Amino acid sequence: MSKIKVLDKNMINMIAAGEVIERPASVVKEMLENSIDAGAKNIIVKIEDGGKRLISVTDDGCGIAKEDIPVAFEPHATSKIKTIDDLTAIKSMGFRGEALASIGSIAKVRIVSREKDAIEAYAQEIDCSEKSAVMPASSSYGTTIEVRDIFYKLPARRKFLRASSTEMTHITEQFTRIALSNCNIGFTLIHNDRQKYRLHPTDNVVSRIKTLMNEQIASDLLSIETKEKDIKIKAYIGMPANARSNNKYQYTFLNGRFIRDKFIIHAIKEAYRGLIEPNKHPVAFLFIEMPYDSYDVNVHPSKIEIRFDNSSLVHSQILGIIKEKLRSIELDVVSSFDNLTAQNGNIAADATISRSEYIRRERIKDAMENFFTKSSKPISTQGKFSFNHSTANNAGANRSQRISEDLPKSYYNTDSVDIAQNQPDKKNTILQIHNSYIIYQTPDGFAIVDQHALHERIIYEKLCDRLVRNQKPLESQKLLIPEPIDLTTAQQQAIEDNKETFNKLGIDIEQFGPKSCAVHSFPTLLKDANISSFVQDLLDVLMDSTITPDAEKLLHSIMDMTACKAAIKAGKPLSNEEMVQLLRDKELVDRASRCPHGRPTTIKFTIEELEKKFKRTGF
Image (tube, rainbow, N blue to C red):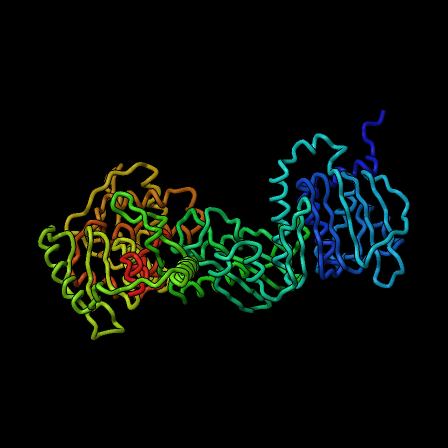
């Protein structure tokens, strides 16, 4: 008896649906893409019960002819490709001809469509691949497809659907992706008869981001646009301070199609190296245009994964333009006193906010103050003292002197020194507090610098300049007495395998006995470092299996560690000259606002915020 049988058409469609239709959001995606391919200018999406009860998509596109409606729900039926050559340059959103057939095999579907030159519309109903006759119907131009009771004949699939709110979250995400890449189209999303979004056609991507995301994300975006080697890139990237705990806010579109590509994700992350913490992810919206024959989108039924002909070129261009943009702007953190929290005498991590958020909060405060000032009765100031800035400054100086006499001298340094290169005639007060932070005056307030984080960045950039850009080894000094270090067999092998790396760092290291080595030369940059401890840490990095396959990542990890070891430590008293030099060096290096690990080096405060805290507004 034969064991091999050909599956019936409905079973084939159900199996195909398992690849294409994962959940209600998959239906929304496929139907929206069909509407866009039909030339729609306005699309309305109606959802009930998270898509489990109803998914309806209405568009004003070209419509479907009466004779084509039954064919549209057949497997591999499509109007978008006709020859093999069409597969090498796919320009439409959908093309496989699987979507409608798959949807029709796992739900109750009703389609109503009318072409623009047709007198009337036509409708058909499909119940898990069982089709009714095509009948006349009443409808405006375009197409409406209603999908009801998804997976109702497949209880094993339906039970894996999540709560309505969860399914709606996935639908909203698919809606967002398509709405962001098609700003010239109007979109409406309705859930359980409540309108969630109504998006009018626009040529302003940022305004659509603002509507779909939030104002803070949109207002902090930096715009980039470039075209090189047939690749046009328009990008909107977030400030480092707005980095998130996951890459949910990274959207990449290739010729209007949302994609996920590991090379692009790596390029975005690499561009922010040293500006954000390693476990953070930047906000980025990338719109890439390139010849359709330069990539293959026919890799997976979801059409999210693609294969570039030259992925290295795409990677290098994205990495280059984002890095260049970030280097061209000031990234110092602007902070608000209202967001400061004390934790063991240190400034808490949540004390920093983005510049746009700070400005937004200030506007709200000012608006409230103006409202209450205008609404309240005038208050007589007779008998109140008048504030004299000159007197206040003298009093402040005397008070500072008295306080300094009561505190240990190592607590802070208070001499006036010139720290502003662009203001050579102006003397500013510079202080070191807790032997860890430097405070200095700015034109509109004051700033606090983490001495270790800033020095770490300065050293890191010097290492990059020497090792990466100029390809020169670090300067080293011969040790009078070689430093012996005990090693494991694996560590000895790591030294042999990475001789070139040790030479780049200016470390002359040789085997010294069966289980030890001797360091004969050591970099002058690390003159204060413990030689044995540094070499042991360096070997740990070299033997880290998570980074060793990538030579570039390995080198940056080594430079991270070297900069941290060589930098001024928190708790070290600095002379005025050392503090001044540190602040001057800040102006000479790239990305000085962040340490190599992404933590801020400088937090700025405005005088307006200070005056509000002292209730001096209104004087």
